[in-house]
Image 1 (cartoon, rainbow, N blue to C red):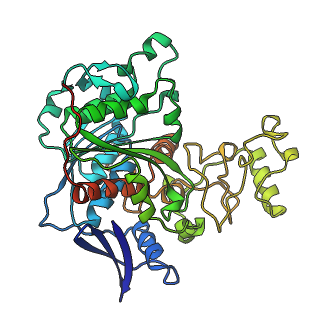
Image 2: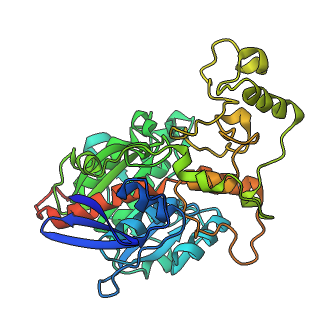
Image 3: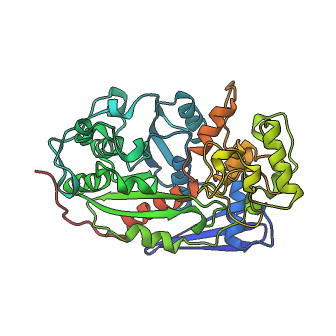
Length: 431
């Protein structure tokens, strides 16, 4: 797989080649002309430019579980558009009903279920690790989901559950208790050609060995599997964020290193914070999205200290006791660097005591819109559809918990490439 960008007049054209096929898409250049063509393309997308999919191609039918507000789904949409396809979100599922509403409003899901994923599928697991297999074929038990029909891609970002599953040894011994394994069962029950799971990198260290169990289950049901840790800044984002991806393609042996190799083919230089939010420095509006939270006097004094002394890390004598004396949280109360990628954005981005979230140039923490930009959400993505009343804590969750779309883009484009570029083989299947 190859990707290239070229500036033609007021447009930036992206060409993606999968095997012998080449696909071209373009955006109008509303970005900094001094940037590289690739950086300018993605900045233009971030600021709201859309890529029109090819209307002649069959839409990619996707089911998105543990979908949140739609970060991973947005990444899949961007990947499909890169090869001229629209995305039909056949169903989305999450226990957060408002997040499901936001996802549906922005990405157009046909079925939306505000329920537990564990309630949707019946399955049984025999053994764990590489020898894991299903005791019987996983079955969809939700009537609406049964009627979904053909699924091209199943995507999910199950909660990590601390990666010890449950703090009870007996319950942890049953793989059905882990939502990561449940996601695999749901993808298999849907008959999806592609299954794409994401999680934090430490999922590989799970006490209950969920990753190797997931791989065993997938291979036993005829999927080729590849895994990799992808990093947003290595793909041209303005944030240091890493996620573990598991890619499974039915009936195709894709090789353990496939996902990592395709990720390398999409590699791009990290972008500085200024690339993502430089045009938002003086934006003011009545919207909660554009308003930084009101801080306590002591935190305002800490921010003043950083600026008055031209510092980016707060000295120990200005910190509370819990963050003094060699703490590993050196970024806490820190000021962001304008010329470097941001640290990982979390749900605590509105609080200086949660990380390096003080704005580089302004005596405040970043606004939700700035956090959304750093997280890869373009300006057209609406977090307050209809009469939805915004609350700061909800915004923090929807933005901070999201998967950066550039990670979803790379992983999904890898999946689509695997379908086109690899040959079908007879993989081991369950008896």
